[in-house]
Amino acid sequence: MLLLSLPKAYKVTAGSSEGESVSGALRAALLEAGISDIKLMRVDNKIPPNAVYNPDLEIPTGVMVPTCYCFVDSKEAGQIISAAIGVGIAENGYGIIKEYAGNVTKEEAEEEIQKKLEEEFRKEGLIIADVKIASTQHTVEKYGCSVATVPFWNRD
Image (cartoon, rainbow, N blue to C red; front, side, top):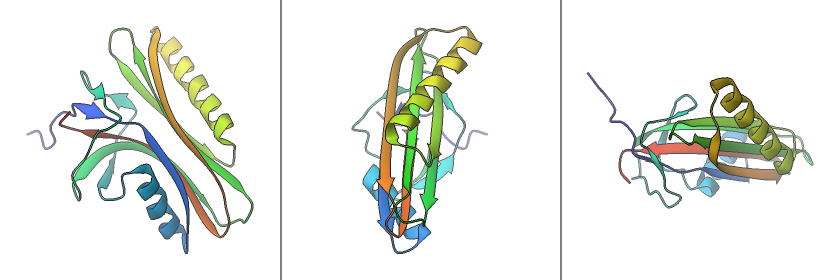
């Protein structure tokens, strides 16, 4: 029995924020990423067959959504934190997602994503035709969080 239908679309998004607690910072970062009102269901790093990229994808409030994501949080004032996620699509439509989050700059996180995608495609013997990356950087004041996500939805 199939409990979830195969996703037809996805978007690539990221956000960072402060909060009065670590969980408050995560919630605010999800809000900045535009996905605060959905239930994230963690999935692996593959793009479903025939799923299309839609940067304007709207997902109804309150639904459970298959999502590949990463995040980093910190309560060390002055610390730089970043999260990045990237989708690589091969010429044949096959897609791979790679994520990275840590105490690095946004540029360093993006470079790490690019390296991870290139390595994975090389292992698979595929050529990257397209890459989409979303990233974010934050300097912590009290409680900070950076999150990067690829949510999927079963409608375009």
